[in-house]
Each structure stands twice: as C-alpha cells, then as structure tokens.
Length: 91
Image (cartoon, rainbow, N blue to C red; front, side, top):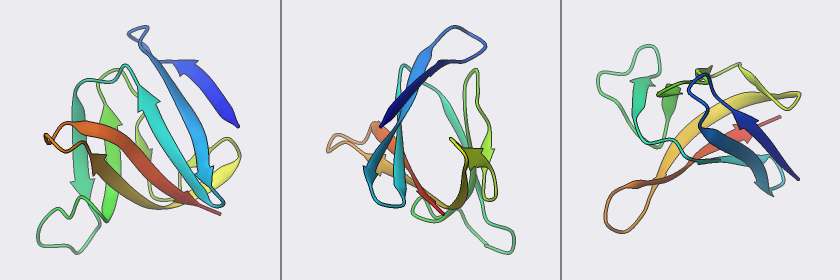
C-alpha cells in the first residue's frame, strides 16, 4: 500500500510498506535533519531517534504512520551517498 501526502512546502512524499512491519518514506524531500536516540553519544543513522525533512513531517520513535507506531528509524543511502529513503519499523 502506498499513501501520498504533501508537506507544508508542497513537496510530495509517500509511505510504502516494503515488507511486513517496515515502511519506506520517499519523495521530493531534499534536506533532512536527524537526531539520535536519547542516551546515545553519537548519531547512528541505522538507529535514529527522529528525522525531520524540510517542510515536514517530523517523525520520532513513537510517532504514528498510517495508524502504525514507529519503533525504529534508519536512513538508507544510495551508492553515491545521497538519501534513497527513510526506513521505519512499525507495529
């Protein structure tokens, strides 16, 4: 299932269930802000506490996506290093 949205800047993004319990966020989202989990001494892009693309939406552990609760956040990079998509484990 794919759900499409527009953020406050009019950029289109969407959520797509890529496997059971895993949702990918993709779209026209160029700039991102990330934060680690509480208690981490450095940011681990495979175990983030939050992500916030320019124009939103802000998503943190415990946030809801399409009625499912986010339990883990990871960033998946393209081979050249750019962000391919955000990966959310949900329950």
